[in-house]
Image (tube, rainbow, N blue to C red; front, side, top):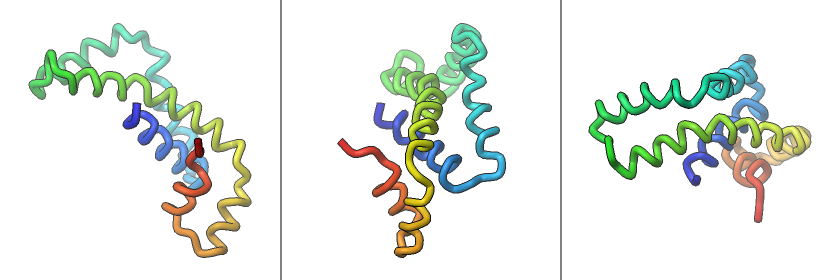
Length: 111
């Protein structure tokens, strides 16, 4: 769960806050994995895990969870980012905050 939230929050922050030109295309491409049925993705995933020697391993379960849950986390956190005013980022940058500080102090949810 920690890896999923970390990857999802970093991806949604970079797309929504850093004003990337092809950012929405990047997140929409990640969401295309939900257009395919999970059964079609399991076979290549199992083959990759077998080639790395992770078959019947706890790490394969973690990798599967992160792989299949991250696109949904990106979607949810991108919608969360729309709720935060972009002016807060601009004000923080005027005050001298780096991109990492904006991510940690403004973007990441508390509690």
